[in-house]
Image (cartoon, helix red, strand yellow):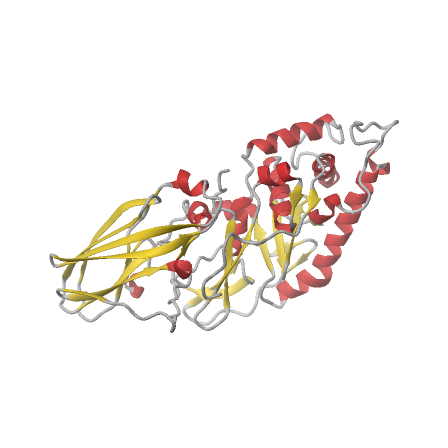
Amino acid sequence: MKVATALILFLLCETCLGQQQLSREQPCPPGKHMEGDYDRVYACVPDSETAKPERIPDPSTPHRTNSVQAANWESKFDFDDELYPSFVLAMSGRRLKAPSALHYIGDPLGVAEVVIRPVVPNANVHVEIQIEGLADKSVLDVTLPEAGQQYRIAPQLLWNYSRLAKIDQSIPATVIYRVSINGSERQETKPIRVRSVNDVPYAIAAPDGKLQDMSFLFAAYVNESHPEVQRILQEALRYRAVNSFGGYQRGPDDVRMQVFALWNALQRRNVHYSNITTASASSPTGHVQSQAVRFIDQSIQSQQANCVDGSVLFASLLYKIGVDPILVLKPGHMFIGYYLDPGHRQLEFLETTQLGAGHQPTITRNLAFSSLLHPVQSSESWQQFAGALRYATNAFNQEVRPALQQHRPQYQIIDIRMARQAGVNAIPH
């Protein structure tokens, strides 16, 4: 099978979480350095951040090799021969350098490549890859100096980004590989399946059987520029829990009140929890784990949000008003956190699935807050907000924080600001 693309490491979690620090581990051995990632917060990683893991051969699939004069070559396509538009759209702003030691030439994040083993030195190679309707013909010309050495060549694909962003169900596609070596040409076509743009490949089985974390892709569904975000902010101001959104200008208590104003606006929109995460298809070999994530407008229009939907929706609102959010992942669940201060010393957590839980405000649904007639702290909405804060805070302190300190798998912190700085784009929708 074909496993992941580049091994992407991002510094997405700071050492300071709440009032305590998550300590880094012992010094790393030679050839590695300490860095944060989505999998273990802090870990010893190879000095080369762009090392692409080798793919696991699928014994059920015959090994096909094309032979042309002076070389043998084989076509490859990542993610079990499936194309995830979410990966392409999220990572289009990320630029990595492929290390020469791996004999990898071209786009380190390329999902399509050819593996070539020349039998003569200084072989002149021309590679073309095209995905019909999704990526125009992409070309890379190289000279391969060593005979017998395996090279991996991945042209920078010329994606049709607008088409990828509109794919809302699984569809078939064809990849065309054309390779010319010292003037002798051979072509191959490969059928693939294209997933819905809502599908997120959040984990992939590595060659040693361990899961390679790809959960940073959830950050791509945080979209502070979505038109629906501005409408929700305007509604929140109309209900007067706060008079303005000023981020960190007026201290932690004001930040908490701004968060409540957003919570209250979503409650008034009747957003309820819905445990729908089924992706548009499933991995042919089971090596790629994926789930569906709703975009902001889809959650609002359907009035439904699972734990990831609600978290990325709320993170979008927070990031827009200048409050830095994080996504907190634990096995089978996600909730949100946010910093109460610009120095990121104080964290608070919120369980978004409780937005539609229990008895919802009815009589006061259209009534703006006021100090005399409808004070914030005595409202049903505030009590439910406070309960969601306590629930998430307990979950973090009792389960997530210890797991992060122990570097247990499937516990991650995704810092949205750092994800943006690392090049993880918001997917337009």
